Length: 296
Image (cartoon, rainbow, N blue to C red; front, side, top):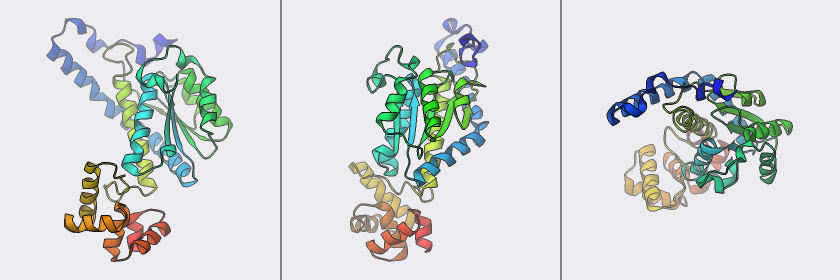
């Protein structure tokens, strides 16, 4: 029953929330939020397993697909849409599906999360394959939309990961890897957009970022595949090249032009003192890893 879930129990520290001063309330909320990273820390081993599966999917030409409802679904979409500008991925490589479709991103679609069949059609629509990794997000761990999606993904042989905020969550039984982040009762009972939502955001950040590092999208701590879609990002690319190679920003800008606006290629050109074609060949042989390309 839902009342037995940790995410639905009352928080003893906020029983008098409506009688607190604004500052006291904010202090209590901040204290509760500080528990989230520690709870995530307890699941590092499982998060590592999730990253490994996503890397395997990417290396075989597969994708990362998030599925969820409400806040959980929106968090998956948020992570997915940030991957192309940050890591230069194709739109299809990381995707987020939300119960109720795109309209549910902005406005709640009542009852959509209870439909464990619609998700199968959603996954068929994007032609889910056994090369992909499906990550189901549900703070309660019992959302039918997520259970149905993970079950279908298992049937076709895709990797499956479940992220919830309750121990022994129902969705965990439908996944190879179960990440259960125990953040404790919410400040407002059952409002899982709070600590549970923060926990899920931290975890998807770790999974997608870890996977991108694992396929060579990062050099040191620099986003060397950043897409130059606006002036801010053009300037960032120049800084990245300068930081990676130690050259002045003017020289970095010159090589960015020579590299057809690809920071990764410009860095290899500078470090190896080679042509654009030679840099691209080195990167291809190194599977996209700048460090390995420079050493070859």
